[in-house]
Length: 183
Image 1 (tube, rainbow, N blue to C red):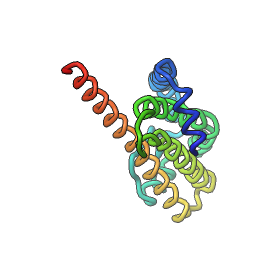
Image 2: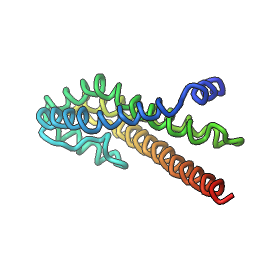
Image 3: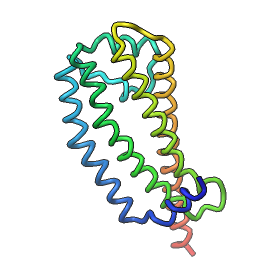
């Protein structure tokens, strides 16, 4: 992990950050709405487990039941296409911002740019578990639903922690710059 951390700190610059933010913007404005439209056409609903910050196993199984057969198939297919790329898009942006903000920190904050990797790991776990539930419908599996729910909560926890650290890092930079201006 230290080698990865060092590589990220050395290779990420402002151009990388702006590229990552542009990519997120394009995904959010173009790709995500298109994907949501396609899912709604196939599933008969716009509700997706991925976008819910916290859901319990029972709520997840209710969502799986709401989907029509074509929707469950489409959901799994989109996890193997769209949702293989989207986590890397937000990973790119979060890691870029955190790397730039904390590259000179002398303590553990220097490694906060690794938090988004944990979020992406749990995102892939969530997608896997929800896909298993979709594919096995009408059978239910409370344990797999619990694992999906836990993975989702952990994904969002690490995404939110990353965002909090970005706000914290920006605040530190603003304070540092204002001290320099006053001096």
